[in-house]
Length: 98
Image (tube, rainbow, N blue to C red):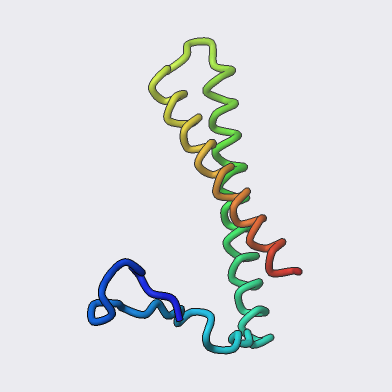
């Protein structure tokens, strides 16, 4: 058995135990995986629709003859947030497919 501090007297030694690895691995239910996939797929579809709207808004603002810099910056920020969200959801969907 290992101790926190080997130089310490035997009375003050605290054994180190790893509770996380002492039990067998938990099994994940197939129903749980299917439910998670459906939830992530629905969230991905919603985020994709929002991303398409944000992209159209950004393009319209960018192509306008007189640019509203504040609105353009906000639209770019929103588009970036949605792109990162879509990428994260897609990674999670791929992870559940494995």
